[in-house]
Length: 387
Image 1 (spheres, rainbow, N blue to C red):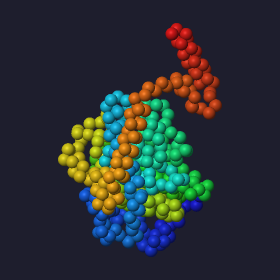
Image 2 (cartoon, one colour; image 1 turned 135 degrees about the horizontal axis):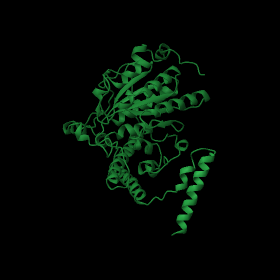
Image 3 (tube, rainbow, N blue to C red; image 1 turned 180 degrees about the vertical axis):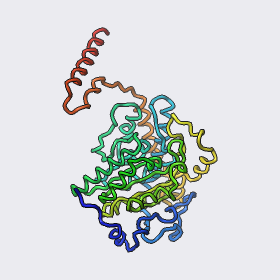
C-alpha cells in the first residue's frame, strides 16, 4: 500500500503561497481570448499569485486549431450520418471542441486519457483513427480500438465509472514508478455521482497523478446546472478533498491549453491530483434521441454562438499572422478528408460474424459457452446447406 500524500501545507509551500490560495480556484475564470479573438493583455485576466499561464508557442496554437477545425467537421458529419441512418447514435460535442482538443494535446506519449461518450473529438485528437473511434456508435460489439495501443480507454457510456478506472491506472503507475499522468474526463452531471466522490477522495489521499477535467456544458441531459449543485463553481468541489481546483473558459482554446498543460506538469512533478472545470456549452441536443427545445430557450443557445471556439481561435490566428491562406486551405482539406473517411466507412456494409458472440467472454470458455457455440455453429451450417 502506498503512503498517503504529503500534507497540503507542504505542497503549497513549494509555490510560496498559503494552502487556501493553492487549493481555491482563481476568483475569476481563467481566459486569455475574448469572444472576438483578441488576446487579453497581461494583468487583465484576473490571474492571482500562483496561477500564471504562459502563452503556448505559435506552432502549438496552429496545430491545435487544425484539430479544432477537424473536430467541428467530425461533429457535423457524424450528425448528418445519424440522420441518414448510417449510425445508431451520436452525442455531439459541437461547441465543446476546444476543451476536447486541449484535453488530447496536453498529454505526453506515456499519459492516459479516460473519455466519456461525448469525447469523440478528444479521442481522435489523441491519435485514434476516425473509423476506429466510430465503431461503437455504429453499433459494432467492440470498442473499435485497442486502449493499450493509444493509451485511451474506451468511451464510457455509464456515467462517471471511468473516473474510478482512471484513478486506478494512475495509482498503478505511481506504484510502478512510471512517468504517467492520467486525464479523467467527465461532465457536470457526473459531479453529482457517488463515483465522483470516491475517485477524487482516493486520488487525493494517495496523491496520484490524475487530472479531473470537468466539461461543464450546463446540462446533464435536461437537468440544468442550477438543479445539480449550489457550489460557487464545480472547481470549488476540489477543496473538500484537499486538492487544487481551477476554472477556465471552455471555449478559449489558448487558455485551455495553458491551464491543462500546467495541471499535467504539476501532477507529473508529484504535486497530487487537480480538478479543472471548463465552462462551455452543448450547442446541439444531448443525442439524436433528445429534443433540447423542451428544456432550454433559443435565446440561451444564441448567446453561446457568439462565444464559438472555432471562430475565436481563427480570428486570433488571422490577426497574429499565423494563418496564411495556404495554411487555412490545408487545414480545411484535412478536415474534409476526415469527413470523407467517415462517410466512406459508414456507407460500407459491415457483416458481423455471429460466432464472435462467444469469442471474448472468458479467456477459457466454460462448458456451457462451448455447448452454446457448437449449437450456433450447427444452426449456421444447416442454414448454409439450405441456400
